[in-house]
Image 1 (cartoon, rainbow over the protein chains, first blue to last red):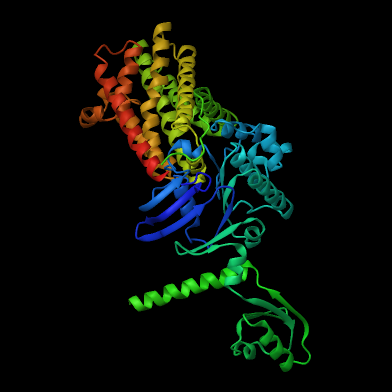
Image 2: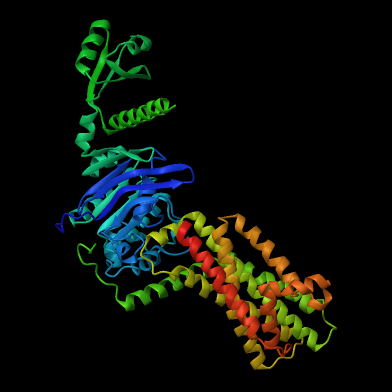
Length: 309
Length: 257
């Protein structure tokens, strides 16, 4: 196999059970060198379990798990990764600089402390005890710990939860810089705009399975929905009966309609309500595409179960 | 499968450095938060002051030495069981241990750091007791005997570290301290640490060798010249307890984290 095209992390048919419950069901997942792959999905979809397997925190019940072609429980494999978990209470009394020094000591060729601090934007926090920082600042410190070892692959599990907009933008810039240096990133996130802003590829999971994998554009195209907003006196129940409309909501008197064939809906709307104002039509974001995909999967699963029964 | 791009090798000097950093951080963080370790060290010292010094004034020099050794054992159990077990249980709960397992931390560095911390705390407990024994309890002890007791305490904390660690892997978070109390206090009583064994009911005397604290007490008594029996058996039991619980705990940590 060509060395450069060998994946940095790979799940092949990976299955993980917790008792009777299947958390991960024969999942295939590949992270290529230098790319950012975003894992999306509702809570309990299996994202954290997938990351746990790749970090060697748990063993797969079936299938293959590889990190740089090795078993993730081998320390040689983990010396090439950086990790930011969803929740980790770091020692509260240690100073930020001490935490960085300790974590950097695990790696063969870490970044200099100042370099790490500058990249994560925490240069002014080094002397502060960890417990005295705000939640957002603590996340920045955790990000600094993830990148201090000069990793080839970065695991970021919900990295920007609890950050304000400015801090989030800074973190995104730092992630882009790391990718430009050739680092690969596996990111899980609830914020779809985060995936849209950063990801080369997205992988949508639900109920322990991957239900979509591809580029952000491909995901959006797969669900060709558009969003129509307007002020109208038409009763919402009338609109619900229109077959062209996939979904309609009303917020502060404003209608929010999602539909595949937006033109047909607009024509009908304008004909039905001559007083209609403030019409807007937008391509659906990842959020709608994502909701649509997971709902489809849930319905399919439901049908399967009914058929089985 | 071969590694795609060569991993930079970790020089041995850096591996040792990682162990040292871990131990340093562990000590630093607890020295800055005395609220955790101080009660663990002061509780047995207070016990000794009340029952070993103030209540036992008139029983003679031998009794005073006997009590010093026994309460010394009671004292070193505390940093082992609580310093190790409770902190492990809390850190498993808070996700710190998961984070450390995901990082390329050298194996055992985390536990080694905690072990050194417990040994240091055990040393402090023995020194506290010795200070009280000399100043208030009128205990006569040669310097060699005092040193032997200190050594017994510093090393004797290890089987209780192992036991505390095992309990810490079974119970997460806030449940651990209660469970450890249930082990600590009854075991101390039944091993003859509060009242000498001959004062206890016959049945308790017979089952005393089941408890690791009993064996450590025999060693502590020997170090202050109150026990002439051969010590190898007691040492073996304590080594076995340490190894056994460490293995059990390590297995659980690897599997469940």
